[in-house]
Amino acid sequence: MFRTTMTLAPSRRALLAGLLSSAALSRVASAQVGPTQPGPSALPPPDPGPAPSGPSRFRFDEVVRRARALAGVPFEATIAPLPAPLASLDYDAWRDIRFRPDKALLGDQDGPFRLQLFHLGFLYTRPVTVNVVRDGVPTPIPYQPGLFDYGRTTIDKPLPVNLGFAGFRLHYPLNKPGVLDELISFLGASYYRFLGRDQLYGLSARGLAVNVESVGGPEEFPVFREFWIEMPPKGADRAVIYALLDGPSCTGAFQFLVYPGDETVVDVRCSLHPRRELATVGIAPLTSMFFIGENDRHHSDDYRPELHDSDGLLMQSGGGEWIWRPLRNPKERWISAFEDRNPKGFGLMQRDRVFEDYQDLEAFYHRRPGYWVEPQGEWGEGTVRLVELPTENETHDNIVASWQPKQPYKPGEAVELSYKIRALAETDDLHPGGRVVNTYVARATASGGTADASEPRTRRFLVDFSGGDLAYWLTDPKAVEIVPSTTQGKITAISLVPNLHVKGFRAAIDVRLDQAGQSTELRAFLRARGQTLTETWTYPWKAA
Image (cartoon, helix red, strand yellow):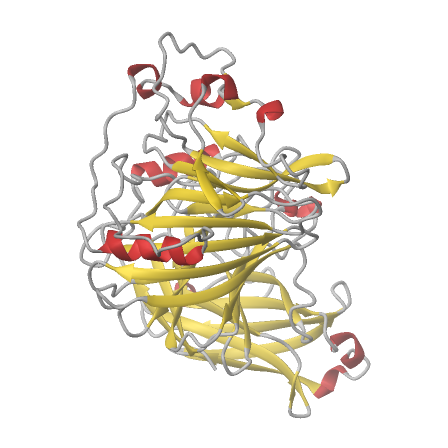
C-alpha cells in the first residue's frame, strides 16, 4: 500500500515565465508541444572520443557514448542570439511560419511516417539538430527557407544554412487510411506529446524533470539538443527516434519507439549521466492543466462546468493497490508524495469523457488523452510525486506528476531505465475493480440547514464509485461497506447509498479537523464480505 505524505509551500506562481507562456500556446495550435525553456547550446558538443573501428550502424549505444562524454564537461548555458528577423517575432508571426507538407521527409522508402520541422523564433531560440538515419548513417537536415511557408511573416534577409530548427513532428495515417495526422511532436526543452486515435492534444510528457519543487533553487529544464530519426521502411509499424539530453545537472540518451494505434504506445529507454547529485529528479514526468472541475469550482464562474486536460492521478503500487487521486487547483502550491517500491504504473488521466460536463465546442476537453506510465524492470524505492500549482485561468499548465527515486543519482554513475507510455481515452480496462467517477466537496450540514461556527473545520466529501462488480452488489447493497480513514482529525459521519445513475454507489464522509490551518489526507474504498471492490480514493484537505 502507498504511504502518502504532503508538503505545503508558498506558491511558485510564475513557474518560470517561459514555461507558462508556452503552455498558453498549446490551447491555440495543436502543433505546440508544451512549455519551452532555455535549451541546448548552439555550439557543437565536445569530441566524444574515437568511434568503434570498422563499419557500424548508428544505434542507441552511440547516443549513450555522446551523453557520457557530454557529462564530463560543464553545461553551456549561453547561446548565440537568433538573427534579427527571427529574434523579434511575436507569437502570431511565428505561428504563420509553417512547414510545407509537400516537403515532408521520411518518404523515400514509401514508409507510413512523414517528418515536418518547426521553425525557430518567438520563445524557441535554442536550435536543435535533427538527423535522418538512412541505412544506419545519420545525416543532419540543413535549414532551407524553401521548407517553410512564411505566410504574412516577412524575413527580409537570408538566414544561415546552419540555423537549425526548434523541433519536429511526425505524421501518420492515424484516424483514416491515406490521411496523415499529427502523431507525435517534440518542441521546447524535453517536452513531447503524442496521440491515439480520435484524440486531441492536452497534457505533455517530458524526458526528465529536475527540481520541480524548487528545493534550494529554481527548477531546471533539461533540453533535447539533438535528434536522430530512422528512415522507416514500407509497412513499418513503428517510428524510431533517438535524442541527446543536456542540462546543468544531467545529460542523457533516449530512445523512443512510437507505435501508433487506438492507444498509441511510446517505448522509452534512457541512459542518464548526472553531472552532479540528482536529489530531486523526476522520472517519466507528465505535465497537465487543471483549472476547474466538479470537485473544485471556487476559481471561476465560467459557463463551462469543467476545464481541465486531466482530472486525476491514477496509480498502481508495487503491491498491486490501485489509487485514484482527483486533481485540484489549490490556493497554494501543494505537493503529495506516494511512497512505494517498484511501482507498476502511474499516470495523469482524463477520466470524464462526457461533452456535457465541459460544454466546450473549441477545446473539446473530453477528447484529451491520459498518459499511463508502465515502468519496465525494478525501479526500487521512491515516490510518485504530484505537484499542484494555483492558476487563474485554463492557459497555464499547473500539474506535474513523476517518479522520484529515494536514493539520489550520483555523478559518474550511469542510470539505465525503461518504461512505456500509453495514450488512453478510457481507463476501464486498466483494472477490474470499481472506479471513482465523481468527487464533490460540500458543507457537512443537512440540505437547507444552517452551518455553525465550526463549519470551516468540517467538510463533507461525496464519492461516486462505478464499474467492476458494483452493479452485481446493487442487488444486496447492505452487504457493501465503505472503509474510510483520515491522517488528521476525526471522521464524524459516513453513509453509503446506491447510485443507479452510475450503476454503483455514492459514499459520503464527514471530516472534522481540530484547528484552522490543519491538513489531512483522506482515503476510502468499498468492500463486501471481506473482498475489496474498488480502487482507493484519496484526497487532501486543509481547514480554512
